[in-house]
Image (cartoon, rainbow, N blue to C red; front, side, top):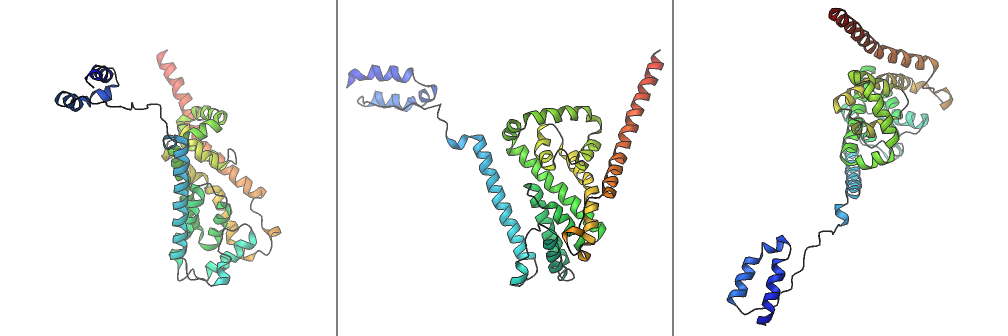
Length: 307
């Protein structure tokens, strides 16, 4: 047994520094007792488990957040909505057309006097949920808001929910979607980044215009904005004011929904509405144009002074 001790000592000396730090107790044991054969297992530094896979962890986190949010929305509806009978519950789902809207509006309007704030709360929670996870249906909810609430309340409520929900999507993408967004939309991100560089001095106005226009899609703006350097506050304000024009059209449509009898009579976008949106876009760009002209004039004055 004594002949094996030099080999064991050289093995401990040549081993990983982590193991070398743990050898004093082992050395004293070898000196005070009879030599023994000790088998050491070196740490495998190349071992990479699935739990350390960042894309997989991001997907798991997103799924968990989606499930938790869905349960939260369900409990909110369960607790705060007024008691509905079985026939009414059949119409309690996201509307997919004018008939669904009219049925849901009829049910909720029966309880608006007694459960006004509860209905407003559940409406807001569902709207933010749709915007957060880019679930289709926000347009129909905007129209329903025009049918349920007064014009000022509906505009403030819908624009706020759109801003909060889009900001949640922004934060989720920033936290968990970096690798996916950059690998999937690399060329679009590069193109949009170049546009943002040109409008960096009037970013808020630019974000409002982007929200007014149908392209790029709003879901893409939500997930791409944090990866091209758009700060959260201009993003939120740009969303809030940018969706105001569309929201006004939806709310006006919702205010007449009780008078409509078929999908054929229900029109959201008309030449009048498109013209109104164009005027809003022009109004937003006026400050940018003035600021740009003022900048050119100031540069000319500076050149004259230098001369």
